[in-house]
Length: 208
Image 1: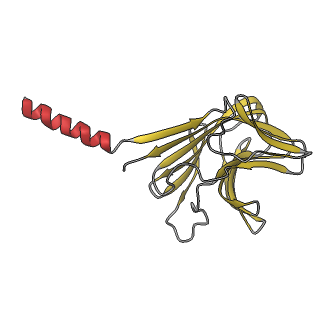
Image 2: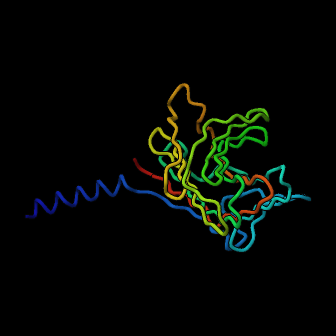
C-alpha cells in the first residue's frame, strides 16, 4: 500500500510540473495599462483606456482605428500560449478584431470578424493581402460581448471566436503566409464604430 501511495505521489508531482502555467490579465479598471498599449486620438478617432475598458471609437466610416502595445506582450511566442480578449460591441455590424506581428502601421497582420465571417489579412509595405476568409457563427446584433482568442498549440496558430475555432494555421508549413514574428499585439475597429475591450488575459504554459 505504501509503495502504491509513493508511486501515486510521484505521478502527481510529474503531472503538476508539466502542467504549470501563468495567467496575466488586465481588465482596465484603473489606468495602470499593464500591457502598455499606446493610446492615441485625433479629430476623427480615439483609442483610450477609460474606467473599465480600452475604448476604440471611430467616427469616419472610411477609415479604421487601432491600438497596439508599445512592447511585446509578456509571453514566449515559441511556447504554448493563449491570448483571450473580451470585447463589448454596442452595434455588431463592422469589422473588428486583433492585430499581431505589429512592426509599424505599414507592416502587421490582423484577424477581424463581422457578422457571419472572419478574415485574416497581412499588410506588407502598406499593401493589404487577404490570407484566409471563412464563415463563423456570429450574428449581427446590439450590445454583444465577443471573446476572441489567439492561441498557439504546438506548431499551430489558432483563432477562436466565442469558444469556437474559426481558422488554424500550421506555422511550420513552407507555403504558409502566417507566422509569429514578434509579440506586439493590439486591436482594430473598422468603419464608424465603437468597441470596448473589457479584458485581455494571457495564459502561458511555462513547462511542456
